Length: 219
DNA sequence: GCGACAG
DNA sequence: ATCTTGTCGC
Image 1 (cartoon, rainbow, N blue to C red):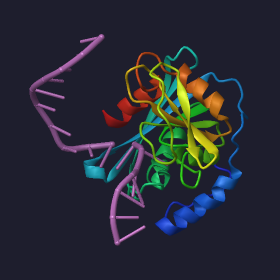
Image 2 (image 1 turned 180 degrees about the vertical axis):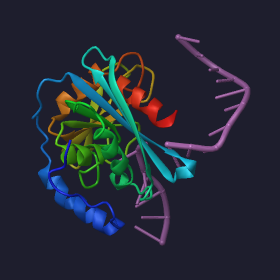
Image 3 (image 1 turned 135 degrees about the vertical axis):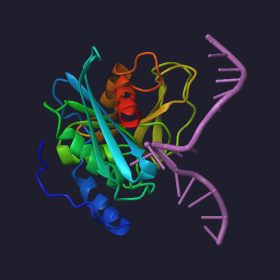
Image 4 (image 1 turned 120 degrees about the horizontal axis):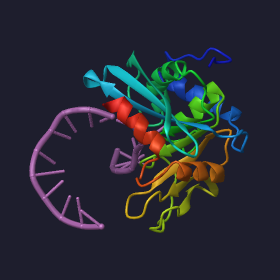
């Protein structure tokens, strides 16, 4: 899994924001995706008070959802947490983990936003663009955009709006629990993204991909 | 100036 | 994200 062009990570916040403004122009927000047999869950955790970043990737067979491959990568943390710049803190470790996979996934489900971001480049979009693999942002809370109430029924969703544009969906993956914020990352449309997220959810709020990755990134 | 603010 | 026990509910 190689990047087509070198990507700088030693940036200050202002330079990172400038880079986001340039990269977002390359996003493809419609389905440019092949058959999906391998879905990867991506999550990040921290050790030693935050000085070490631990990225985990769990690849599941789709639609069966059994685990095919897992990998964990640890790297020194080099960027602080700044709302809107999450990818600059977590992606270096995530890329290291992805490079260790025996086979590339067909779809990436990332913890955090896709285009539901102030500059349309949440961590899922940034990652999808860098590795050129379809990606979806699956966040537990909102970063950007507004929405109404979501019907309390599994599978129900309402649009996430910014002005008169839909940047994502607030999806009820399970009745009785807080909904998830789903948005296109790269090379996939919103409706398709929602379908795959629901296809990865069984009896819990979070997709199985995310649950496996989270366990690896924390435990 | 006053909030909001993924993980 | 992480620091942390018990507790309410199906």
